[in-house]
Image (cartoon, rainbow, N blue to C red; front, side):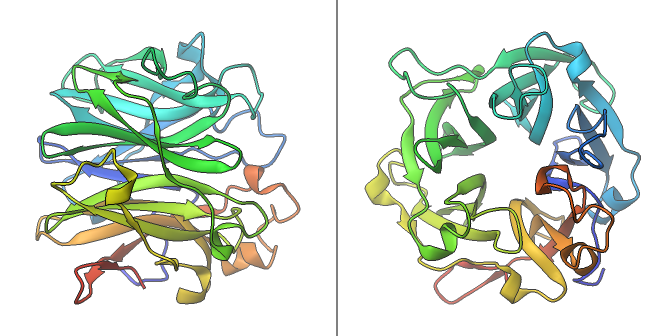
Length: 324
């Protein structure tokens, strides 16, 4: 596919993983088409295919919606599907009160079977912090991801800590809906490119390659200024010690690096059957940027024109991923 082509249109915050059943699974935020749309941000969708490209035309199913919950309401954002200790989970953000976009926190559902595409899903409610942590998941948290490294299990997420920052904590894979340590501040908006219009770090995503853990994150407001930053650590390091993390001083992908795409962000990483890594991210098209899409007058929250795109990850001489 051409670099400027949509991978999947109108799907922001894209996430792809490969299951041990041989399928690639895709999920993303299901958008609202304008402020008055009575649907949208109200469900978790899933596609599956035997190849990454096959996801483009795969049937999309709603596997869960707010109608099935007593504690999760619109807005459903940034779902991620993960198999943890033999069970399928989806991490996502949802409002704790009806149609209140500012009451967002991390939530989790579990699949009661082995087939996440066809089997039933059950609501486990809001993510829980360990007893000694009085900060996490109390007010505005979202964009949670999960990863395993050297036998330890982690979640990273964005939360309002004065600004939107990214935090890291450990979890027990038998109970991956509760942290097992207090949250550590991993990154906050400090550089100019992280503070355009709104100081934001959010949307963490993890890639483990050649004995390094790479964590990307999205920065600034969600217009053309949106961009992707990067941190990394050694896989053998104590990841809960901030001194073991390195943060790049410049973004690894921004609008300036792309042609006719604007605001790259909220990505995930997936490895194909050839062992090559891909970055799945969303951007707005030039039509949307020029306000010719029909939703340009809307708040970006209600603009559905963020679409999933795909690019192959390259590697530089220092072993760092190159997205440009």
